[in-house]
Image (cartoon, rainbow, N blue to C red; front, side, top):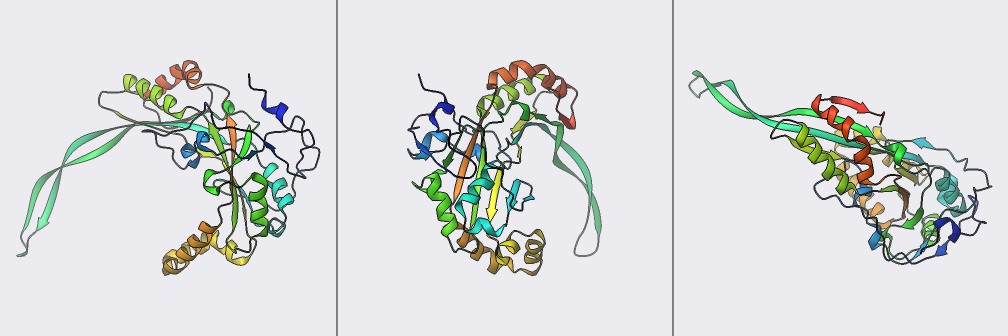
Length: 316
């Protein structure tokens, strides 16, 4: 039997220093796939832990870290916490402290949408080349929303992350090497990201809820299940003015209005492509897909039958 995760890590690990333990993880029972499910804004839904090569993986320590959390200047964006603090440009240890200080579990929801198509008729008036007007009837198809609501499942996400690994696209770099590569880079657009990935059987959840919604809704309804997340990323960006400008909403709007994006966007994209410093921080769900369904199918069915639109269900 495999030993618990917490028993594999030296107790000396702290926020102030990063250390890793090598473990083989060539097989993993948890796999995230999308199938017909749309993962709106959730790159984690394309994350597959089964294809991560054998490399050094960081597991949580047995004891809580004793070093104080990071004090770098941070901001809160749409996806989570980010920082342009100059110390993160060159200090791998401080970068690690910053990342570890902001690894609170992400918020996760299940979004159910039901729609159907209706053929309607309208009057259309047209004018020919000679100036004569005529009115005719025209059929058109309109999509009607029957229900659209969210189910907050954040309380089912375990607060403690299970492990941190290098993303497969980062090559064979270890966690330590990935941090040091960022700190030593002179790329003005460099960025370091930790994506919080929630491991769950999304296909199973989508399948169960789709069948439930179809049985409770009108005939012919099209059901879509999404899994939106909030606070799912921790990012460190270079502190120079070019990097700050590239991540400024105002600058981005001005580039679009003045067509400067034609020049700026390719340069920025090429610079970012060369910097692939990315880690994945995995979180597990406290309930399986079937357990979640068995506990909540009644409330979800009721919301579908009441044709809830714009409602956020939080009391599961």
